[in-house]
Length: 342
Length: 153
Image (cartoon, rainbow over all chains, first blue to last red; front, side, top):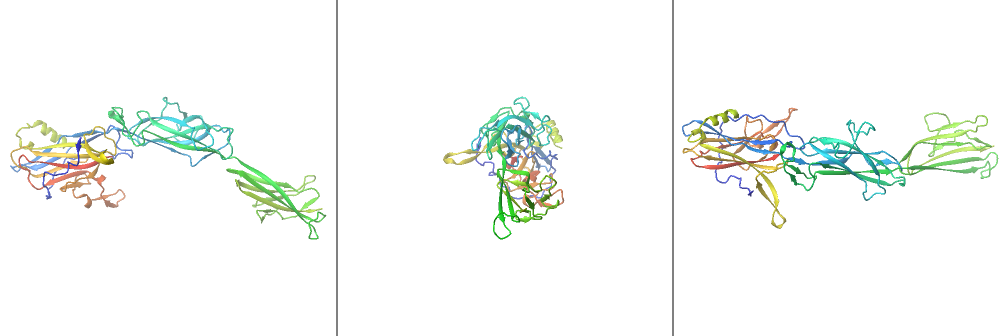
């Protein structure tokens, strides 16, 4: 071990630059290294050449010894969740897919062991991981029966430097979970060669015959994903108000009854294709073109707007229908229509 | 070219030959930060045992005129090893090349042409060769040290 900066020039005074043209050894350059760095097992070779003129005026060349360094294998890995956010699920759901990406951030080809942890704090339930699946066909999507189920020690994914693989964790959601509950899981990948404190090394275990050195990741990495139970419910209420022909609120022939239908979505997530339909009550007649949705009129005709009035046909009473489409949790939709008492 | 030089050296007797009057020795060390007293860190140069990408290297060239007469027009050229990115030198006589050794100048005055045709200032990692041009003759028995730093890509 040599301490300090002894390598600075101290013993020669060489400040003038002479305009010399010197033939130098030609060298060919290897391709630039990858992002993960120089590949493990490569050799760093350094040779210098001195050219000078001897006392007899002859050009002379001296070539240095070659200093060689073998690049050792750096063990590093990064795991990230490949889901855009919490994964919507339902109680008792099976084969619920959580996606992760495992990337070899070291400089040598390395096999990684994969493990899943579901007993994590800060959530309401523990999903049960039923299998880990490797994205064998590389399309980034879980394909049942196509992608390969992972078995530790048997088909550990081997990744070249900078290469990555998509990994799916399939889970069962407890039936006891309720709306809004989150359940976290963690996928960990660990270098098969060595894990531990950064800087720890294993003699001769690196790719290319050098040492294997644990990098800043510790040779392992993990990432969390989360399932969230999104069960949306819908409730309907119906109220009525009456205006009689004399300005009062008596229920007499000729009185106008306004029905107000309210749909409320509760829970989390959203409901799709929500529709309201209501029969025109017996002994009343629908007042044409009185439907409203959220306070705005909708026509009776079957057309681009959400509402339609279906006239009575024989014994079947007339009815109003309003398509509400997708309604997110904690939103309401209000529909009104008028009938006249016969 | 290098092979020819090596062959030449192999075929030539070493002792007393004018061509071998200057010896040049190349060595490389790894620069590491180690804990020091008072919670500080100090930088030490170690013999390289384990080398990984990102490690800082110090290349040292020692020359010595082993002959009986001075050597003049002394120029040392060191091609950068491909896996190493140049990180500078404290030798004021050093010049660098970013074009495979065709032209040499201080790094700050060099330009690199990108594949799209635009020119930009050369960066340390562009350096392909380091060269030291010594104006003063190396007297018989005199010696000196040249160095540059690099980082493992």
